[in-house]
Length: 483
Image 1 (cartoon, rainbow, N blue to C red):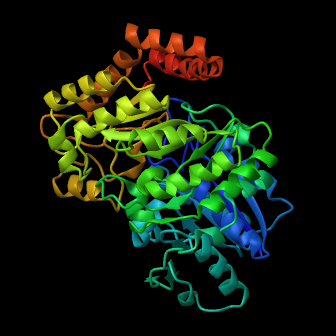
Image 2 (image 1 turned 30 degrees about the horizontal axis):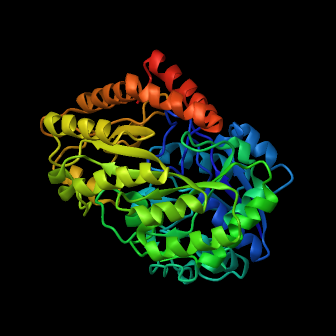
Image 3 (image 1 turned 90 degrees about the horizontal axis):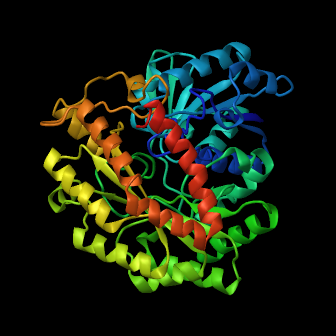
């Protein structure tokens, strides 16, 4: 079967796979990771596939359709997100006109959280996949080829006459080693130079070593909506083998991004992966998403294995706020982690949220003071973004904090993140302004600039990375579009 996997055009370099999809202020554009994984499974099953990442290629719908002139897809898989949902469904309408006999399925966190609502927007969308869809698409392709009922496909919601049918939930993949390397899909279909992460060396690739997360932070969308908080990991041998595949097949790539929601959730697993990378004499630098509770000995081991940076969602520097969002960690632990990361010579890209439950201007001032004390290599400040299916969304909705039910308002006209919450004592305007102020003040501190200059002298490659990121940052700063 001919299958099109499409990351559809939207606003410029819209990073749909990011945990908070938007045109990012730092220029970051994520790989279409989950779409690529499903592409690999379909390819391995013998289907003829085309994977198009329109935001990365900088193409619109006309160019997408021109790319398909010699490829008539019977099944079209369209990635989507909350802020782009209406536009993505219009893409489905256009493709249905061009390929009227095709079957169109939407995938991603938004249709996973709101399958019925999504299907009722336009009839041109035939189905949505709920949660992880690697094998849902494979089974759907077989059902369509063999003319079986769609009710045989676990994890699928579909339109049947005037009603919506939701099949039983698909079991989460237990053996992640059985899924093809996502980097092998990149090799065949994508250009690594199209993707960028401001905190990483360019060019880089992104992989996943584990799905889900054992922690229960109330705002995090993928663990709740996509993975049902079921945590599973690939074997250390399988991960090390993909590192070697990347080394052999991507000679220009300078870094690997481990984009697990929390790579360090299972510390023994991390330790075993690092031991194999050291044994294999890994020379590719890597970064990962981590929790701010890693002890020095493991950080040192990670550094020896090639880790140069960890991205940590601190979320707040105030204990009562951390407790409210189920972070299950202490501020004291954060301070110890920051000291240990510096000792291990691992950079930290930190993230702090504005607008958590119990946040006030006073708690936010305390969080900013915390940020200055730990003095990370870079720091994000952003409003709480709430997405359907998360506890944070239900909290906001149940308390009438949401300003709108129009998901297109989750972004500004330029595609930047928008704040759709008004909470007691903090309006959406207040929160955006605070984030802008903190972002500017943090990165323009004389001690911070001095630190970056010393870093550039000691390590010119880090200086080049910082300069590349700074160009985007200052262009947004002086245009007034930093958010």
